[in-house]
Image (cartoon, rainbow, N blue to C red; front, side, top):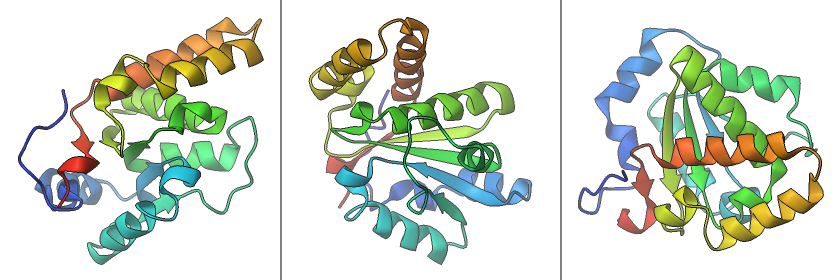
Length: 177
């Protein structure tokens, strides 16, 4: 279900008039929340995306200053809930992070309950690997299942949230100019 338009400019969704309309439709503290795995995209992709968003007068929330932990913080949960749109940047090690998966679970809940817009970006990873949890994603979930033995529901919720997000029409980084 990935957008198959030929070579959109980086990042093409910033030019989408629907996003600008939705962001302006209701005043929120943050227009857009960005979920990403810092070690994959925190220094190369996310800073460029953030700069482009700010130039378009779109206020992104990037959690780079928050302390990492196993549980999603209340301030982060609030930031997700207060955003009109969430951009989920799937990368090779995204699923290895319980923090990222907790964010994603909250994002999908906001999509289902609050009709939040969710835009997946597949950064240097095939969307089908994410959708079907193969390769690095399969390995990550095997580790999570061992680590969270006895809490099968948590891992199952993460898998469900991941599939839900990966099934949405999104953007593939190899298509960016």
